[in-house]
Image (cartoon, rainbow, N blue to C red; front, side):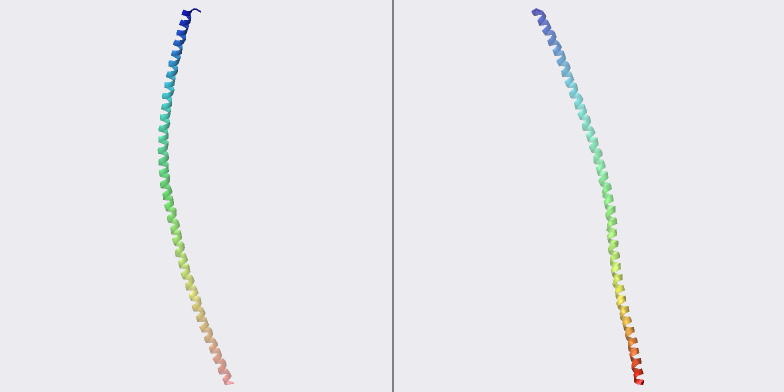
Length: 129
């Protein structure tokens, strides 16, 4: 091969390499633009998801607080009712015990009187004998 043909061949190959390099650089730019677009889409979607999650969290916390308040109100009412009923039953128990003591004393008094009456009757009978 002579030098002129070799030089022409080299020039042709250099030209093809430059074209290929330009195409690849354009492809690199295209990939960069495409990736940046996708990254922007992902970030936008992330913002939307975060906003939706924030709204869901806010709603859930509000609902949870309402449920908590309702449950605590109900439980506190139950505790108050239990305390009131316990106090009422304690008062009734004391009243019943007091009545039992009073009835016992009245029964003792009645029994004592009957005994005294029978003793007097017996003594009176014995004196007559």
